[in-house]
Image: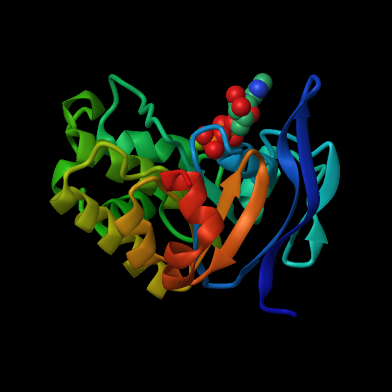
Length: 237
Ligand code: ADP
Ligand code: MG
């Protein structure tokens, strides 16, 4: 049991009379690569918001490394080691790529120099050659890389990538996949929320599928592809 890093039990989130999520039970193992799929509006981002502390669940609990974090604030969850990248990157404009990383580093504990840490993370995501350029000069792919770097700068144990590849070309998708695989090899557990099915299938050791806020299937890529409930959700009957 001790290799479970993140554990959700009976997590529910309602907006008014609308139940956007749950109840959901879901565990993540240390160092695991977990894919989350599901149609638009199925509650994927709401789940992430409950994990990261944007929302407090209305029912149920979220445990991180054995500790109940359901009611602690988002910035403290980030400090514990839960980080997420956003679907739509919003870098600080008028700042260089390096400066964009120095801002979140103000809120992180780092051994050694902040600038060295920032440069090293930027190099890991393939932005070493862009450190001095303004963020508004970045391509769509580079913006995604910067968003990942921002999420990684505090050295998280869990990274949640919310649609980090949407709108990218096949080659660009391969680049982002390579970054996430290398990160995972360094020991970081990764939750990949993604609509690009071949990417999430290549990446994930396990995939769970959501529909209308509920977890309807869980298994390997092959099991998920062959699951009748998943097929029904994606392709109709
Ligand atoms: P997904 O990420 O799977 O596309 P979301 O988690 O964003 O889905 O949304 C799940 C459902 O909850 C949707 O019907 C969405 O409209 C609703 N929802 C999400 N956030 C809010 C909110 N802050 N207020 C009201 N409804 C919301
Ligand atoms: Mg979403």
